[in-house]
Image 1: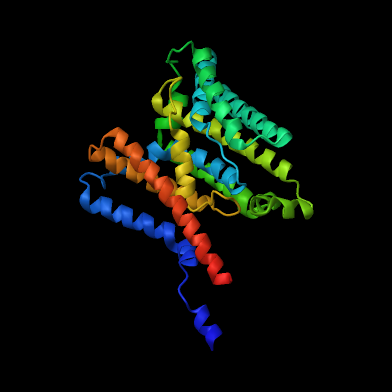
Image 2: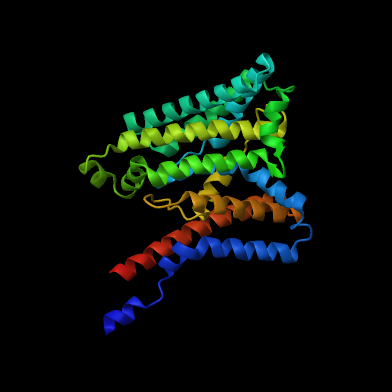
Amino acid sequence: MSNQVEKKKFNFGQFYGKYGIALIFVVIFIAASLFVPGFLSTYNLKSILLAIACTTVLGFGATFIIILGHINIAYGSEIAFIGCIACMVDVATGSVWAAIAVALVIGVLLGALTGFIITKFSIPAFIMTLALTEAARGGAVLVTKGNTISGISSGFTFMGQGYVGPIPMAVIILLLCFAVMWVILNKTPYGRYIYAVGGNAKAAEASGISPKAVTFKAYLLDGALVGVGSLLLMGRLNSGVPGAGLSYEMDAITAVIVGGTSMSGGSGTLGGTLVGAVIVGIINNVQTLMGVDSNIQKIVKGVIIVGAVIIDVVTKNSAKKDTD
């Protein structure tokens, strides 16, 4: 009888894991709709989706990385470097397809370099991507000589600003990236390996999984999505801007954490990241509509990150108590 009573006890960890992110989204959306003038306008809602397109795509790659217990803090610098080169190729050749190919290749190469150094030399991901942050930002300024690359093709800008019917092209690209990454994470053996290595690398290795190979491939995928993100950002800006992408890594990582992916690794979902990105986008948008100082917005973002991590710890502890 006592066992039946224990099973019926409310468990915060399990409840939040199933419904928490959805409830947070609903509460924030309703509050913004009721108290922020102009929030529900079609123009504003589309603006939110366009604003989060790049960081959400980055967040999909970050989800894989963070589930593994790693991190990438170089996103902003990487998209500036890759995006500027892609714009230069577009202007020089007049071919948006050449620009797309270059962006994806450079993104994958940077991901390969990052994954190789991390796995080969056991360098902490934070240190490696910190170094890449400086190198990529310097590279962006170097290749452009500090100048904005203007005159990109209409095909390039279409990726960041265009519409297919009422739907922004950037959102379509975002959803395509989500679909591909969702299939990889949820329907392939590699996706299972991601969770296994993130949950317990030694146990995964003992069962025949190579943590280094899994990690390296995750950085390759992450790099490809950085390439996509660079195209979306520069297309939206209508030019190659070497100083673009500042703090984009914060928005991407915040979306992943708010979406329920654990910083300690082993758990997380792409659906959660998508909802988390929308939540972060709404919060940013609401603050802008209300005229909140940009520095205060940064403080709010920091509080959100700490709050999300605290919730992660509390839910894990709650789940542990329930199983003990």
